Image (cartoon, rainbow, N blue to C red; front, side, top):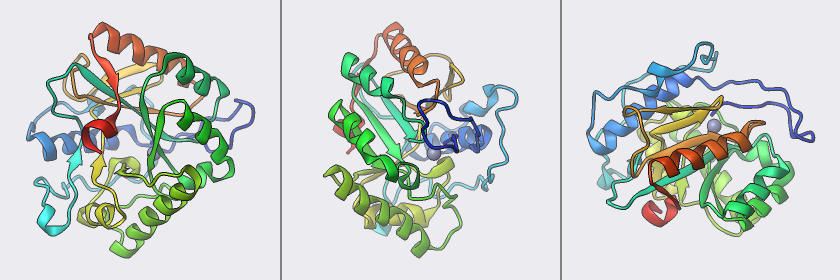
Length: 262
Ligand SMILES: [Zn+2]
């Protein structure tokens, strides 16, 4: 959700965050409420580091749909997975900074992960993500332009989602089954568009790793079923190692999100 604007240049890119951690954390908490009914949890935002705010659009916090309604064509919102297995799920967003070492890391560790990619950020370098895909990372939909969707007309939202899925089908040979909205912000139109564009779930998160720090939406400690959010940044390798250490300490095994909710 937070971004590096400059395209990949040998790993040297200028960090320019546009993601609002506060809003995203709060929205993640809303996502939790919409799935598990566990309202009143402390949002990630409560422990966001100073300066983590951005001038990104801060959406209304009115929840779009606390009760997923498949009859109305609204796909479910998933912020963590209900499972009795000791598993945790790694997700990585956007795709702006493309370190060769990230592919090597996945080849070395063989950890399953899901990448929610923004087409405008990666369309000049699909090859990098095809190599990442070959290393075990599944490619999913994070819109074309990374604009705030909430409040936008349905047709505009559908265009962002369906265009991305069609392009990813051509680029990666698989049509996305999961969608993550930019900034974690969505409304009923988003949930409808996800289904119409051929995806089955709208995915937020319950844990974030950024700036070398793990932040929990539901209190300290990684728990089974948690969905961890990271980004492709210059810190990715250190944060991947941090993810792995945190999971091992919690005795949780990284698992593929699509195998549980796809
Ligand atoms: Zn994003």
